[in-house]
Amino acid sequence: MTAPLVLFLAAASAAPVPPETERPTVTVAVSGSPAAASRIDAALRAGPEPVRYHAVPLPNATPVSPPVPGSALADARQAYVRGDFSRCLASLGSSDAATDALGAGDALTASRLLLWRAACHLGDGDQRGARDAAESLAVLGLPPPPDVGSVSQEVEALLARARASPRPDVPVRLDASAPGAELVIDGRAQRCAAPCTLPLPAGAHVVRVEADGYEVLVRRIVAAPPSLQLRLDLTPASPEVAAAQWTAHHGRGTEPDSARSVRLLSTALRAPRLLLFSVDEGRTLRVRCAVAVDGEVSARAERVDVDPRQLDAAVRGLASDVLVRGRLLEPAPALHQRPEFWIAVGVAAAIAAGATTAVVATRDVHTGIRF
Amino acid sequence: MTSKRAAVMGLGLLLASCVQTRQVELTFGDEGEGLDGFMCRDTAGTPILTRLQDGAGQIQPAALVLDFIHLGGLPGCRSGQVMSWCVDHPCAPIPAHRACIEAQFSSVDGLTRAQMRASIQQTMTSLKGTLITGDAPDEFVLVRLVGTAQSCAELAEQPDGTLPAFDDAKLVGCVYSCPVLLDSLEGDLFLGFDTLTDLCEQGVRVCAAGDLHWQPIQL
Image (cartoon, rainbow over all chains, first blue to last red):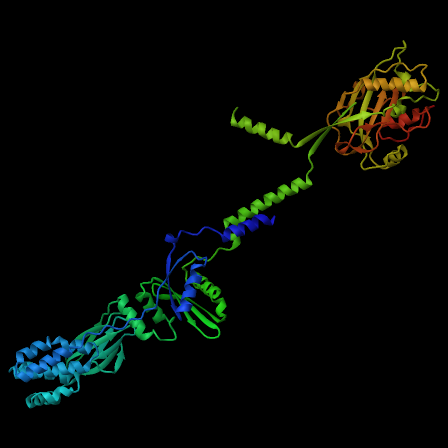
């Protein structure tokens, strides 16, 4: 009677799975030692889940900063000393160079660029250009660079006048399309979280907007009375930028499975379905697992006090758990909901009925009587 | 052959293969020792087998009526045990299973007992191979063979499903078996008659009675 049921269960456990190429791919990343990552990868590949695991290393990228125009400043300085002010200005490049430097957070370079621009314009006889550069330096609130001792007293006087010139503060309200975006104004150390309102001296400023998962935005704004209100739209980060952001903000963190970390990882690893393991190694292991679909964490699970020898089983259990709860895999239907179960029950009943009939029923016997 | 016909034939073969057909032969013993029930004499000492003689002294065919007596259980084999059982059990022939054939006996006038046994045995032997019934009841029964001067037609099952009683005055013999389940019987079925004397007409009446009850002799 039980034989068909046993056969059914055996067949169900060995039910055909889709071919490798038809299975959904799940990207697997491991925060832990290389040995743990290797064991987790092997354990998952040996597991029964009908998915294709694709192991990738965690990002380890550094942010790409624009090159500091150190040689350009040296060329400009030499040209200024020689009295070749046209070459000086040419060496400094466009007026956007200072904006770029501030956008990169390099206030010193921005300050030097503006100083030499003012000096070269003044030497070239361009009073207006010199005044604009000095104004910019004063409006941005940048301290005079050490190079100030190398310029003429006229330039120093120009800078002093610009700094002393009264400028009204303009209330500036800044907002960003990305939630939790941070704003850096004129390369200062202080930041504010969008949306924020702050008074800025009237004039041109540089705003840098940073948010995890978004490209850095550098925008030159002009604060003009009576007020300024701006909304800055950010574009989603490329995988390379996301990798750099993850490395900078979460690479050495203790919570790699936090929502922000996983969201960045999904982008950085180009993983619409991401399975992230983190293994804290000690005498016993603490294994955490999170699954994210399209960057959003849909399930988490954790095992503590895991015997290192039992890591494989713990990993398979965690993976199965979060893949089902994260709706990447359908939960196995209950036994009574499977048609195969009722087929097996029917076969078992038929066999039982046949056996009972064979045992209980007697063959019809016709006995003839003759002399 | 159409597939439908083949299916029907297949089903028939399947059903047929589920039916076991057996044959049981009646025996009265190698020496005819079971034939005492046909050698009884009446109170006047006349063999009851002479009842087959007509007025002209000719021996008319006898009807050998085979009945399967429903016992409602399994009593002992001795005649006393059977009769005691049938006092409080519905012992009666099963009407649907009554079978009857004719048999031609020879005259037993003047024959010694041994000669009479041999004559009767010869008659029974002449019937060897004759099929009496093709399907015996599938229950414990007592098989009884009654010889009578009545005809088979007189003793056939009535339209109302009853069996006519034997005419005691025309009984010429009776033998019976132990209670037996014929579908399970191994070997031949022995028919006999328990008596210690040849004045056993009374026993024949009891044997041929519808309910195997004691039948006093009408003197």
